[in-house]
Length: 170
Ligand code: RP5
Image (cartoon, rainbow, N blue to C red; front, side, top):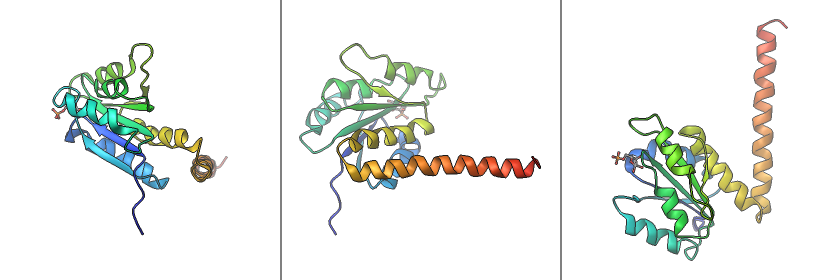
C-alpha cells in the first residue's frame, strides 16, 4: 500500500533537537498521521527555512511544527512565511534551562502567532496532539482517535488512583 502523504511538517533547528522531536513524530504516528522532519535553522540556513514555509501549504502540509532551543526564532520565522498554523516547541537550551527558548518562541508580535507549547518532552507530545486537534476539525476519523486518546488517558488516571487506594488500604 502506498504511504500516506505527510500532512505535518516538523522543522527543527539542529540535529541536537532530535531526541525531543522523536516524541512528536511518534505521537503523530500513534494517530496515524505522517510527518516530514527537516533540519533548518533560522540563523544558519535562513533562506531554506523561509522557502520551506512559503511552499508548505502548496506541498500539502496542514500544520507546521517548529522546534528550536536558545535564541529560538525558528517557529517565528516559519510563521512569518506561511498562513498555515505554526506550533512552536521550545527545546531546552544549554544555558538558561529553556526559559530563553520559551520566551523567544512565545513572544511573537501581533498578527503572527506561534502556538507555543511547554518546554521539552511534554511540549513535543502536546505539539503533536494540538496538530491532530487542528486537523480533526475537518477529519472525522482523527476526531474519533482523539476522543479515544482522551478516554484512555482518563482511564489510566482512574487505574492509578484505584491502585493507590488499594496500596494505602483506604
Ligand atoms: C538552536 O540552537 C537549535 O535548535 C538547537 O536547539 C540549539 C543548539 O544547536 P546546536 O549548536 O546543537 O546545533 O538553533
